[in-house]
Amino acid sequence: MLAFPDVQGTRPEADARDFVTVLAPRHYQEVAVAAYEDAELLLSAILPDARIEHVGSSAIPGAYSRGGVDICVAAPRDAFDEALGVLCEAGYVQRSLDDGDHRRATLAAAHGDVPLTLLRLRDALRADPTLLARYNAIKIEAGPLGTSAYADAKAAFFADVLAR
Image (tube, rainbow, N blue to C red):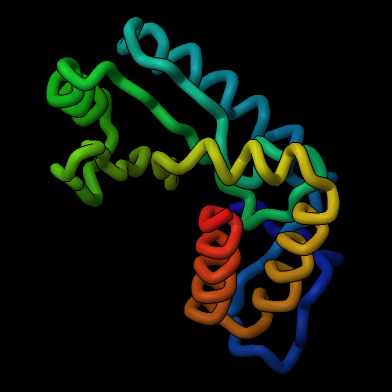
């Protein structure tokens, strides 16, 4: 995780064990985009039939972030199990599996989190600067409140945006 001393929203009295560092785009975005490009080359090579998309905050110019890189790997329905196996063999760790109508899994890279997430949210934030400003404000305000409050604030925001 990248950490910088002048990140907005810091509070010295916050418990450092439960504090979310929110990074301004200038502190992480260039490195995150390069990390995505490297991951896309690898993922495209091992899953040639999959669609690889950069999602999450690092895919949205101007978005504040915790500094991670989120990637969506969309495999053809009939190749889902094979793609999941290939990713696990490549070192990704399966965190969840949903066998509902739209099968999906969440995985993490051995070297850091790379959850598979939604494209719709990314596209909404890219298209609407006001919505992006609201998202950034929520993250900056919730960061000092700890991991749980940060996750809850983002979840409420996501639910609101995705309900539209």
